[in-house]
Length: 73
Image 1: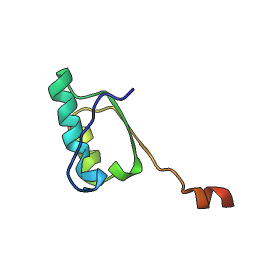
Image 2: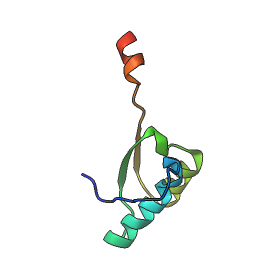
Image 3: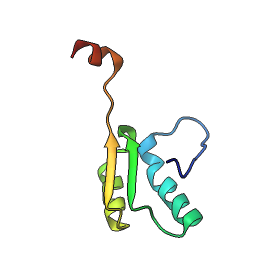
């Protein structure tokens, strides 16, 4: 279920958008989510620490293989 969206100028790194998206969720729904699923571009030590500090219990970061690498498996 997609519960938020953030449109930015340019092409900032996904990892820089993680905390603003979670803050947006808190503003819209009154609390941080219990679980978060995002692609691997959002992965960083800072984002993991932010999730823990905000009592997010489950943080799933999906790292997808490229089509070229998948074909070789």
